[in-house]
Image: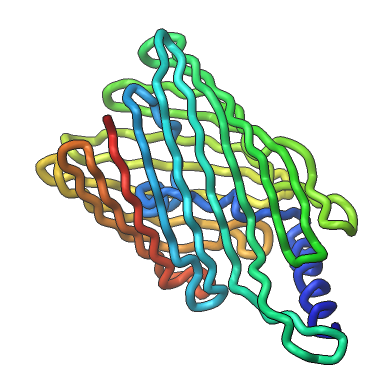
Length: 281
């Protein structure tokens, strides 16, 4: 019983220290985005696009796991829809009964299910809305649900992309001891195709809890088949996603793409590996 209580106290203390919950909402579950310092442009769903990702997240410190699936679907006219889901699983911990006997293990996890849409005003300008349902479990006695939404406007040309987003706006989440806020933030993204095959991108984020994040990255395609990526993310380990450097490679052929990303230069997230697989119809 004492071990269960200590785990609950520890997990509740972590939430209180961050003044928010569900930090998984800040993690890019996309290998290409993560490889470029975590920058996240808004995807133009001109074709059916399916993406899956799997990550061993912070293996040296937390040993967490991320699994995700996103689908972008263009509709007739100027509309497109998005559906996706991500699972963030913490390292399991042991549970004991009041006599100190081992009962089993529990794995804290966050499930995030997303549904959204985008309206293209013209070939360059679009607006979008994405809603999310969140189910979070810190322990068998500490579970909560929440709803939030992202609003964005995007502008795209042949050489330049820009997007402004307000993310994770919604309800708090209550694990049974009061409501905790979600990590709401404002994102400003810009990407520029410098030359054939070479793209640079920058993102600035301001969290409503007072934290600031920034990411910068570059991508270079060789013969439009193999991609080399690198980036850096500046963060705040107490209020947001910690700082890290990123390296990645990718390849695509006949609509199939595969991407791999490795994080370094971070005592918290070092040795993180994310693999992505996609198909564009």
